[in-house]
Length: 439
Image 1 (cartoon, helix red, strand yellow):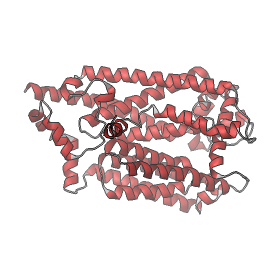
Image 2 (tube, rainbow, N blue to C red):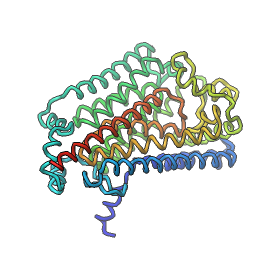
Image 3 (tube, helix red, strand yellow):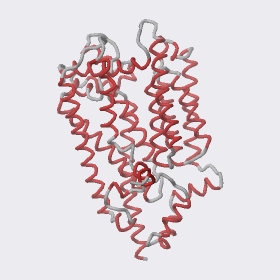
Image 4 (cartoon, rainbow, N blue to C red):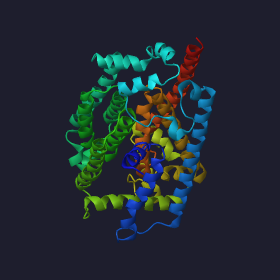
């Protein structure tokens, strides 16, 4: 195989398909192995932990496969293969080159059988309007609204620091109070706004806002929010621009820095804890500890009778952290404890609901992933790309923390609405294409 062929092969791999969840779950287990099996810090979990993880991943894959069948049905129903010249094989059906360069679009349009008739329609669609606006360097109403969302999120985060009276990253007492309602709305506005801006528009100022947001959310002392922002933007940009090696390096270094540095500073800042392990060893310890908690959860299935999920939906508004219920149930201390993505549902409802949860997550992720790529193959930028980036990033974080965040379920709900809307809109596009062809 020639070097160029080798390079093209890796470029055509879809690194952020939902299957990355499986890979990172296995990686998470591997990270915990040093502290579990090669140190005296933790005891190894039972074999049942790995059995339940295997079953969960199996149902996740089933959800992915069902979604692929649905996507194939949509392509046949809307005659996408013939109308849009999309190959029916999923690995080849979508343009893996993540560039929206105008020259590439012109080249593709010349090879389109219905180019002349399609141009009349495409000139009317949103993608063309957005390109014209960018060319003229004008802000349209949507971009202004998204820009204000991001600015609003930044301002609210600053207001939250003023309200708390300090920087939570450097104080365990302040960190315990940092997740206020102001913080919640700040995070929602920022992560939706910044991902939507990157998905629909390409301006340098967006990167400045992105960096400002990361710094502010990292200062809260919570790694997960900063990582969610970085990872979701990474995924969104992956699908809307032609990524270079420097782009992969930038986001990888940023993620590792937040994961290691912020996590270590936050732990050291907790006045009532004394840690004698280093920052990298701490990461292995956290993974191993969480797997041990899952081991205990397996022996307490359905014992909380839905209380964790109830407080996931309501706890933020009445001051109850669902993860403290996990702590109280399995270690008999009222502490916020992570138990992987499987722990809360096992404690609430048992193994059957764990399988159902993983199936649904796989189903939604693959539908969002596939539909946004269909739109991309039509040279149309879908807002679904931004929300796919958000929910995939949050789901990857759930591998450790578990689905006990109201805001993430809200993102999933919005994504499901966008999936339905995108399907109906795709039907409309197909109908207009067909009429243009017949005309």
